[in-house]
Image 1 (spheres, helix red, strand yellow):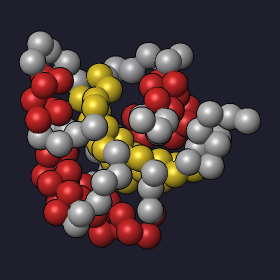
Image 2 (cartoon, helix red, strand yellow):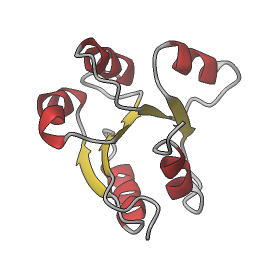
Image 3 (cartoon, one colour):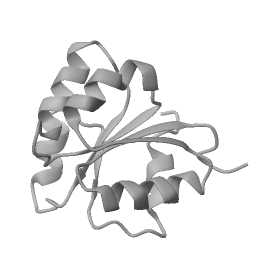
Length: 125
């Protein structure tokens, strides 16, 4: 059985190339992937998607990832939300965790380890 088999993963990123790449990588490992290139559109459809995990870009033009996460958490949702960020400098991980993300994945990703990273966020504590 594939490690992500049947898991619903939502990816929110304004870069269509990243959406296609991440979707293909996760789909190849059995995930059911939904993609959205807008935080606002994602929030309108999150309840329909019912994801097990959300991969959320921090820098988007309409609404940044911090704003999207805040709105998700205001609903009482405890879905794991992992930040996708090109900001992987010293101290950034702490800031991301303090703001309520479950963890983060730095971009550009290593495509060989990306599916395993994502699977690790779905494992029970």
